[in-house]
Image (cartoon, rainbow, N blue to C red):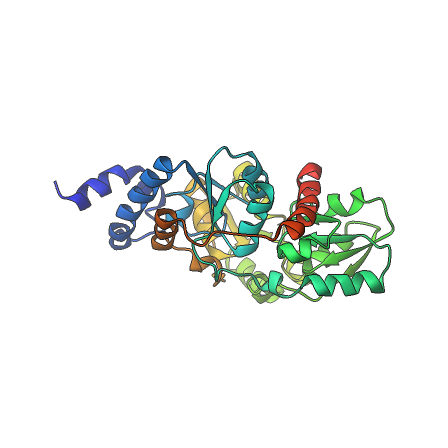
Length: 329
């Protein structure tokens, strides 16, 4: 038996689950990498945390925990591993380091950024605080440690409304996603002072696109992410975080569904819900797609691309993230 055949056998259960989403010819490349990564992480007492937007071979093949941003932050704080490999974008790796400062946190590609995180700096927040003295700052977790250090409490799309209302105030500065800010504003009496940031994936969707898909697929359930524009969310049957979207599909098992978000997530959720038909709009996140199996193996083998945060900044930023996790969903 060849080495390739051995790899195919040891990873056969994984491939059976995602075979509809990964061609067999690609699996011949993925299988040896998956086998090596899964063996190496045990040897090094490493844990792989993957965001829901990772490709199926990562999400189902090597991740120990796959989840939304809030759950990843919580799991990073709980893990007993010595090394955390964060398969996601840079702010997620920073958040993992904030929650587990004693751990070695690695990211497979340092260039895996985020359009939302890039839209705002700590200096921007300081200027806003001068303009609106005394108004608390809520920052989406999709921000840099520099921004989190200037923030009273962070939030994710899963708990944004709950976080805002927990502050017991009549107004908040809500950063940086303008669409998530609009989503929150519609569900609370708190005045929202927003920023003009947006996600390059979610801002591409349109209400017309959703209506066209409904016309072609009568009875389809459309589930949107709060980073989408307001008219898109108005056209959806349900809106929620990536974790909330997954839970909706699992609980309701719609005959046909469309997830209005990054397209790899549809592949991952369909693999866990084979009786549901997914209509897949394909807006890829170029940053998430920088994370690949070869890069995961390389950073784990060599322990490269380690995340470091200046201690004073980390101490301030950690408080805002810890407040977020304490509030929960």
